[in-house]
Length: 144
Image (tube, rainbow, N blue to C red; front, side, top):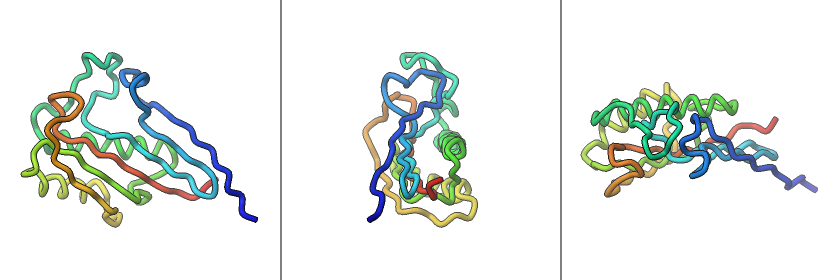
């Protein structure tokens, strides 16, 4: 009979501004290790207060997107995963016209990894008014 047990741990990697609001990553370990990243945007990872968190990249959609993908790489690496381990991605943007800019930057960030199943959504706004993009990621790696 297969061992169907697993362990779930939540982690925060920012300096504290979101620790009482949400987890950055949920990791499920059993036969596989699954990582569920919360929406990653251009929030300053060194911020400590949710009321004053700065959005890096200014009003530049491309720069905010590059910052988000750099943070995604860092979060994955902290748990033993890479961009090649992504199995699902969802992007939330405030302007649908940015779709091709987004996918160009996503392709660069994936560094040759296959494009994962993806949903691209335009929303009226994100958690912080200056945010233009937020990306959720699920990744899977072998348990161990």
